Length: 227
Image 1 (spheres, one colour):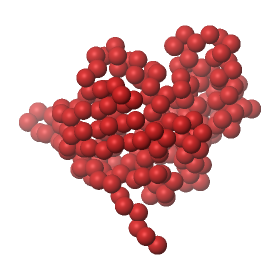
Image 2 (spheres, helix red, strand yellow):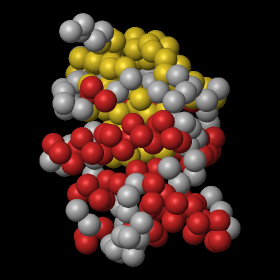
Image 3 (cartoon, helix red, strand yellow):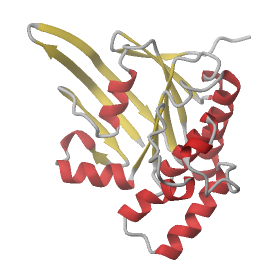
Image 4 (spheres, helix red, strand yellow):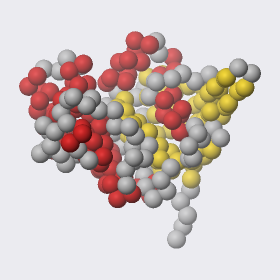
């Protein structure tokens, strides 16, 4: 589902260079939940941005669902982000003046989905994330965990094949964060999507199928310790 080969990204500020990614290579299979752990500034967000087509590397390639993201024109990247990749961010990113249901419906409106089909899918997604009774509430009327559930439902609106979540539990307490991670795991199983979840919370990575660790731009796979 995801193939990353030799990814390198360097940020330059005047004469100073910061290497964010160093020859990063890995693959993710369909229906797999992968946790990417690392400290703040380790390169997690940079890596996810390259995979989701939000930024371009200096070297290397990314292939998502058979499409070479790193070779795409900007118009094609817009289509990739609309139809293939769903994004979940720690800041939720909901539109304050819209209800939960309306926020979930935004990507489908942009994709020109017929109104009846859109409304039915919104109802299904609200139920899927356990918010079927909260569709008319606006973000300020919801808890942090509920807002993140709305954001996850919105990310699933156009049936993406890849879900990219950047620190989705960072603004939540530990119990709510675990509930959100468990929801993501259930969605990977039930919807058949692949999920890449960046987190620094060691208590959540046990819910992943695999764990990758990034430090100073270098990625390695974490081998589970035998009990």
